[in-house]
Length: 159
Image 1 (cartoon, rainbow, N blue to C red):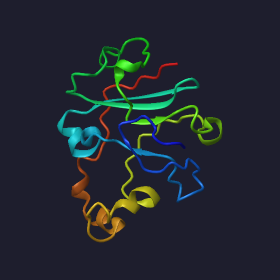
Image 2: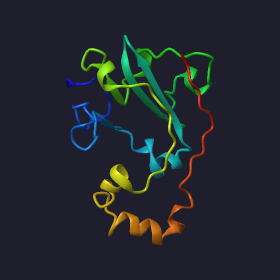
Image 3: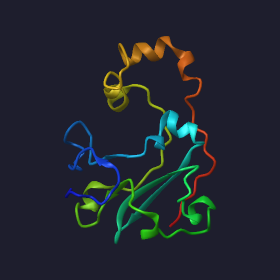
Image 4: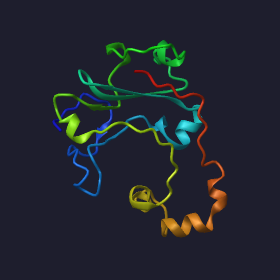
């Protein structure tokens, strides 16, 4: 995938092949610290919008609940939405002319998952400053996960 990608997020890898680098793909790390975890909870959540278009590519935006720049179509849940330049740059962008979407991107499936260990989550355990082993920590500290749940206000799918 060619750089720059026209996104606010930081490119983690520009190789979209999941057979390379342990299934890393061509992901992006969001620039907004309140798009996940304690920062996300502190602002009362937010909105994520994913656009998948043959003409515009794949784009992902995020606005915190208290962000005054949230497009009204997003915050009010209108019947249809049409992302445009007024939305600002997306956090993640996969432009249609920079990678073979039909080769590297399949149909989307929505999954809500809380993974503590394993291939993806376990690999970041020590680099996040956590001591010891991920599996041992999870097994011996169940009280640390009382607030590990999903609270979803709404989920909208537009075609």
